[in-house]
Image (cartoon, rainbow, N blue to C red; front, side):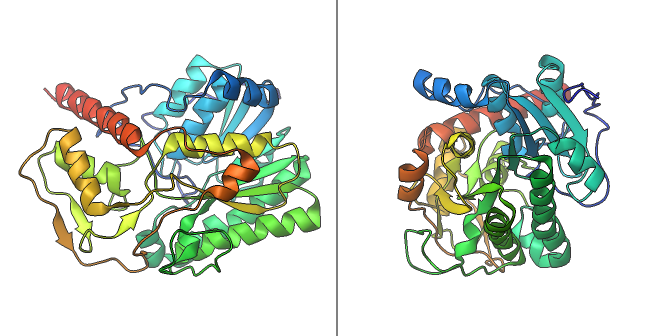
Length: 381
């Protein structure tokens, strides 16, 4: 079978059952009808030329590619001319975006609906891939506290299976989506890769285990790996209609419905909110490295921290909401107090610098959610 034959997807019905191995879900169509967002990863001509030289006509695999970050990465890979296979079981993802890519670029993309825990589906997905971008995960700290066993199986065992399949398929490198939650609640700021990990949730522990697996597979099995520790990624198409939604889409959803957003804690806690285009760019740079990366870990953030209270105020202004104050609730177990990335290692080794600022990212994200909210209202009239 040709590696890039098209798989038909019905975006209204294509939802997997069983273990959820996708990255953060996009909005459901009944809640956010699909309004196409502009391509989020804007590169200079020089950046595009360098990356397309490495990726054009190259077969790559994206696990969790129907999810939030994975979907944006697939957009960029298609634009750079790569031949992309996506594996996602759709248990926690909406198929609308990936279906639109399959429809518009059938010669460049193949979709495998299946779990990374299923050896047959996974083997099919990584076949012929030079690079495997591993984003499939259960991505919620509260959910991991509720169900640690499931989180471990998907995030840790799943990563081992991806590494094994990639190595057997002859892939050159696996680029692993790690998490800044590995640092825990150590008050030392900024977070730097030489700090001892202190994971405080089952999610953090499972993602840290994935880093160790990447290093050991590089040492023992000869497949190169790179680990990207993301700091609070946000952007269009991120889930807003879940109890485990990330803070920015959750806030925007509440404001657009004239409701108070919920802050867990007093709101003075800080995060390094990082637009999704920066995470995509880091993945592309990690794939483009000529020399082995050997399981090294890199912080991928914006390098600036913002309090949750300030974030709420900024988002309210962007969507034109006044007189709605956040609802404060007790802190949630396993969440850290403050976090901000030292990105100097990624700058020096990968050539990474953020390509989208916080202000630019919040503006474009708020615009996308506002447009989708308006579309949802129109469809119900």
